[in-house]
Image (cartoon, rainbow, N blue to C red; front, side, top):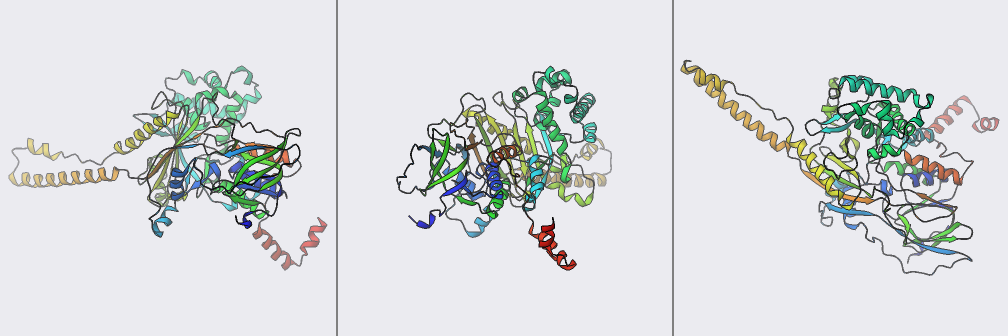
Length: 596
């Protein structure tokens, strides 16, 4: 065993296990506040469940999931202190792979490897609200300069088999110009949006009048009386971003309206046409930005190293230390922050009482898009016509659309090379749905097959109607020369039509470059307890990542109650400009700071 793999430091103010958004943010903020932090991750990549993998890494993920990828070093007995007990834990990656494209990763050349590394495939689809907590944190801490973002072009919702997907209206003008919803629906939607923005539920103190958010929609705004349910589905799934109507029944009217307000307040911010931003090169750029903050502030980050045992003093109700693996080393810590992948061996993985058991997800890399961006984006400026072919689109399929076993929304995302997730000319299309049973992945596969085939078969094919054929048959008294000329034109048009149709059929065929379908179990709360242990929940089925910020803030203030959460990071460029300006003006920088 190489001795240089052991850590010289054996005591830390905090040990963080996992590099997801919450864990990385806690690690970065604690190290920024001057704490000694050790950040471990049993996987070989940053991001944990928020990781963005290359095509090679995704292929390895498909073949090595739930397998021990690291050979553990021979066990060595670790001494226990007085009244100290140990809890054996395991790093559980509760993923199940249903199917994936077979790839030979052994005999590939350098060019192919480089091409595979141009993909950034998210393990879970997540976006950032343009006016959400995460954007505010990026701006306040100045960590936004570490990343680049792209706005989502459009939000779509599936309405029927005949009409397919329609764009969710994102402004007052779009509401009143929307061709699919009726005039009464437009007025009702506009009235509802205005009610939410004015904060009338707080002014009128009406929350107690309604059982839940769904009841509020039916009573305060008679959406239920409309012949169609499309307007309520717009609000629940494409504006409030709920997973089912059961979610709406669990929320109070006030909580539901706050979800609507977050959507409305994010519209049009930062030059977007929707309410979401996406970091270029994948969602893992978010946790990696916080990891960089921690690294600059002397935090230690180690991949492919987890924990084997947790040491605690039961009488004092606190954690005293951990034992790492595969390098067996005992470390002591004042605080332990771990994610759901690290659980006691005695814990059950799935909460049997919860209806939502897992998240099933499918990733398809194809050469033809599912959504035509030009169809949902109306730009008349000829200088922006080229951009109409590119962009990120998010679609929602309401529950029970394709099957009675589809209990939750199917979320669809489509990205291209402009998001830096694939080469030019290819598209990354993902499908995601929460499940109640292990066989629900069949429901998603059925929906995927239907949607991909529909987008191919229902495209309009250019056709030419030849009217001259009938005219020739009726014009028997025409001169022979005219007849021969028209016959020649007819044959030419027939050949042209047949050629165009064959070409369009070939172009319509969508080639699947790579695909994978897998699921992740939703765990129940761990039995780990202690005054200085903090549990980070796993990834949720919701498409926004902003809810991680409040969890990280609570953990940070529990450890550092009087410290500023992720204090603004100094910008070296600003300091350089300040130094040069002060020098030119003859100002002593140190003396000025002392006077302050």
